[in-house]
Image (tube, rainbow, N blue to C red; front, top):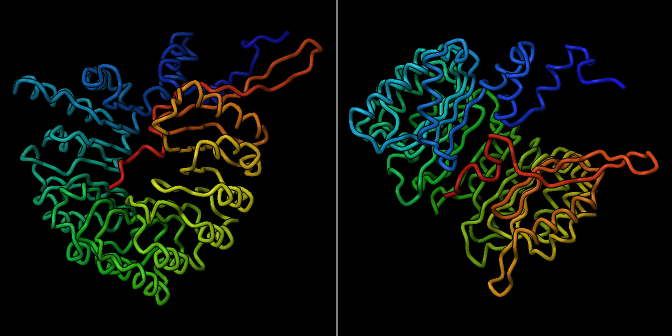
Length: 467
């Protein structure tokens, strides 16, 4: 019988690509030098620190001390996601921590993406260190500078493809036009994330009109929680665009955002003719909103569709006829269908799975009893990889995690031919693994199992708390 050691060495690098957990990669580094040479770059390629990690604040310091002291390891880092930081320190300790982090960043000579979003954790030294990273192309930061950093430093990032600003302060917004002017030639993605009730009044139509002339190469625009932005600001950006807008996110904008005017203006412009992804907050009255969205999406190559309800009984259910028309017009291309905070009918889900042969992600809200009958329906979507079902919990009925897992197991077993690798319910997410077993007769069978979610990335449906 062949042993693992008999496999050609060339296959080892392919096999290691499927190892997910950092702890497993770390263990592989200890096997021998061949394993180490292949596993170390994978281990350090991406680093994530989230607030819910055990001793997350200590891990930030440990990570950057390693990157500072081991430039041979730091050169493998291409992506850093830092969402926690040890701020409850004395001034001297905080300065020392920032010094460690900035020194570690300077050694990340191949860094492409950096996320640094903990409020009050960013300072001039960190930004100066990031400016030393010549390969940096994607930057996601907390824009609430709070006198911790000089917003003028942002204008020196001139080669970015992607910018995400979270809760930008007034001074940062004041410098945004100058920054966009400097990096506009390369910028492909711009996202402004605010909290609606605390959003700066400076994130408004005038700001977008000021930015628009330098956003001519933009491919994706995402605005979240910006209640001073109407259709006029969005149309100003689209009118200046000389490229192809592929993605548009309009969430928590002004209550006076006129979806009718917006969709009508799209009919006389080619700015959205290449739109592949649309994310929107549902508006009232629902009938006018659904009709206008269908008009907006006429003759566009839509692949990703996401909607969020602002809450309220009148926008609590996405109409079946709207879903049917969306599938009729775009089903052959749709890869993600995502509906949050509003219920979708069982028949609509069945229509989606039947009419979207390339569907990969399905995130919906439905009753638990409907969810339990989903197996045969999901079986029709052969390319489906990720499913998340939110269902309301009845206060009079006790539902345990064990009950939910049993429901999911039943669903998964009813659709063995699909490609589902991830399934979630409410706040839980599991990986779906398929184990090959040999029965007493020697025949091989496949059994599905739900296991702990192991990927370091946050599942798509949990990335942002919607405004």
